[in-house]
Length: 148
Image (cartoon, rainbow, N blue to C red; front, side, top):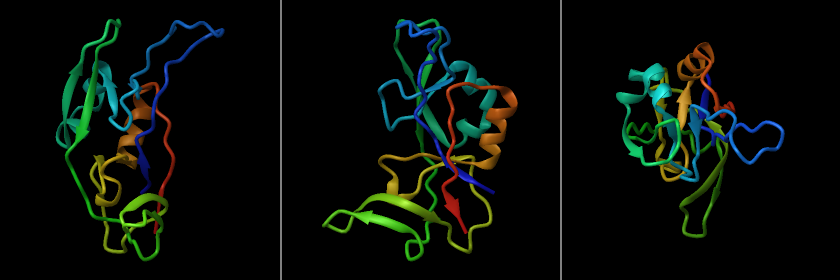
């Protein structure tokens, strides 16, 4: 089972036009690190999202309605002794360069945060990625992060 960060989406442009031809289902909208989903993405992803966070409507003059998403599910799954972690001089985590799962982890929620990167990274599991791919949602890019 792979686990992925929620990526920053971008608007899709054709021919270099400054105007979007297609507004994506997922976008950073300049709100990084807050994931932003279209109303359609929320309908398609349903309980994968709603049971693990809260939404806030974003007031934009766009044909697509977007919502910021605050993941509220936190899981402590990072094996810090085997992961590669960059730290500030205070000892706080700056970035996790290589994520290694604790041996005891059997499953993960569809969308979640971990304590070490709770301020800047949201993760998703394989079921989330598969649902996005099956339904043809746009604007998503996933990178496999966790290893055993």
